[in-house]
Length: 337
Image: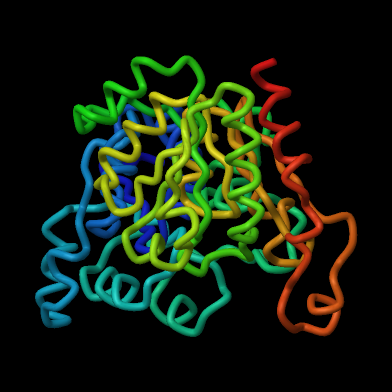
């Protein structure tokens, strides 16, 4: 088979996009002469653009509010031979059908992929024991790629360029003076079960006592949800809620030792960059670390050994509170001391 232009579509969250990037490594290996594009959204563009295998970012937000005809014409103009739906956005799937893209690849799992995609792969993400990054490789079977790499191999498949954004001078000056910097990212925009604010506060104080400069990060809105962290005034503990764009944040992660968070985008960015990435997880399926752990040379996870009563009954999860600040501190220190 020969493909001149292969595109991958992932129009959802940052973490999902990061875990889709390794499959591009294999596409590039198999089709070195092909143009590779990534269809995404404006807010994930900074992550997509630092991948070396992507020739072009196609911003679906440019036509998200257009008519169905205009969306189809937009895709048709890209001259895509094969479009892989790592996330089967219904609007994009239909536009690809009307644009008559030759290979429209997705899972059987949804009615719109069954109707509008002509290359369908059978597998279940929810019930599989594979990691999310590995599951994406199933979608490459119609391209003649039928091997799913180990997580050890996937660690080397991100192929990221150095982020080019410039940090605010005040942040750069502090980083330059501090030999050890760790990011604590307490919120997840609802994508994960979260560790408590008090646990993060205790961990920050323990890390500062060990000589780390501790940075609390998140959006301005998230900062309002953790006022103890956003308003903290303590030596070597710095809140940065709402103070950086995603481009700057990616650059910032690259300049630190690493990051502690629940299962969220920044955790996967840190892991992809080879930074310390300590993930805090519930054991409940399908949000367990077997599916969503950070994958990187210096990534690790902490997870409750047992399901809480809430998880057993399908209710509110309290598993994360079984992870102690002392355990997280030890996980961070094992990489640097």
